Image (cartoon, rainbow, N blue to C red):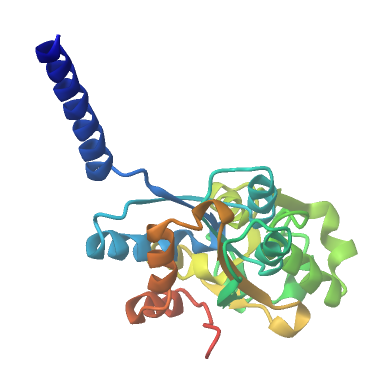
Length: 258
């Protein structure tokens, strides 16, 4: 019996060792929920992070900041949340869904963009021209860039004139796709998206006066579920690295201390 017991104990110990080794070799990726205006910049940042820290895998999902806030409130398994409007992570922090304070990371801008013509020569008032039958903006109900586009149009006295011609993207990246697909002739898009080389080649852009809308101050949190997640902490620190800041600037983001 003792030999059998020792054999079984040895097998059990081996199984435990294999389980631990597998977990160490293949850790569960840390999950980021990121606003769609970060799609190109964050992809580059994560590529660099993976090169510097291959033992800390990260997955990212892009979408609407407002929808991500709601999902995290209802228990969605995200470890970090990068929002295009700092109000959303602040609300999560106040509700006890954050593992620390909200960290501002950038300020965004909105632009007029089209891939069918040079939008650098356009202004908001030009959008009233009937040749623009469909104008794309992100849905103002849950997308910060759409909300700021609506503010700018209202401040310019154009909202009532253009409202019937607006088509709404689920998020700002989808809004870009609406213009690229021909579903709209022009759109009000995030500067960070049109600064990508592949988008710049498709058409120029006009920077909208930021006095026409509230600031697009952006912030992130480590969520409560990631309070003890070393990868989440490491990536939060990585956002202040010189190379990361350089990438953010290249995509038109203004950094908090600049």
